[in-house]
Length: 329
Image (cartoon, rainbow, N blue to C red; front, side):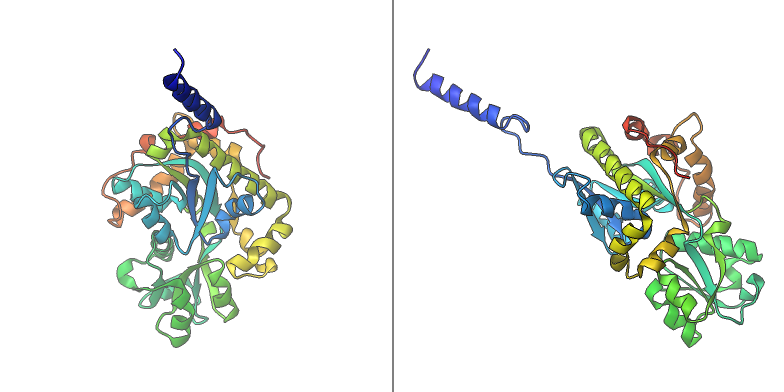
């Protein structure tokens, strides 16, 4: 039959053909949004974005001022994914939020530090003194390991919660005798004459950064998650092959000189895609071995209600689909 009915069908058919990628009547998918805070360990995603290594219509990298803000945006549905520390992820999952670890990004091997006034000559001398620490799980974890090594408990010191940007002022005023800090902020404290008495190299594998994706997004948009892993891998390759060039680009955003930026990199160990995959897979994933002591500590501090359900928390499928590019030296 011809006439108006046939014309309408023809017009609709042509329109559907024209928008075929998104489907007739369907809105195009927005980019997958991944949140990161200003931390050198997350900069491969910044490199991937700024050097056009990923399609901005597929992946949107959102820089936020803190991990607390990233967590808040994730909870409120403003982010599809985020780069977080493992302890933050454990607490997020413990709260009932459906999130999955799809990659292990890096580990701090000296980038998180405790700095003390010159008169503190040994760890036991912290007894009876005040220690500044940021209201963040990583700081609490570093402080707990410091106290264990010093043979002290939290009752033996005075813990003062304050923003890391206030630590130097508190040290100079004598309000505190030590501070739990991290790169790049700790650089200014060291230059002011305070010395490193403990760092994350003494708690290997405990401070891990991971890439997490909301469970619903992982189910609905696997191709976009794959693109996100590829973006990380590409940015990491650039950082690995030309660290000085990357430092020249990224240092201003971290309020560092390129030289200081490279110094911060020495306190980090990045995981290549192959290494991340190995950490996530197997009958007893290595990530569980590394993460369980962290979980135990968080439970002991009352920061977790129950042991993690690692099987539900880890999803290695995107990493298994990703091309592998060889281990980092």
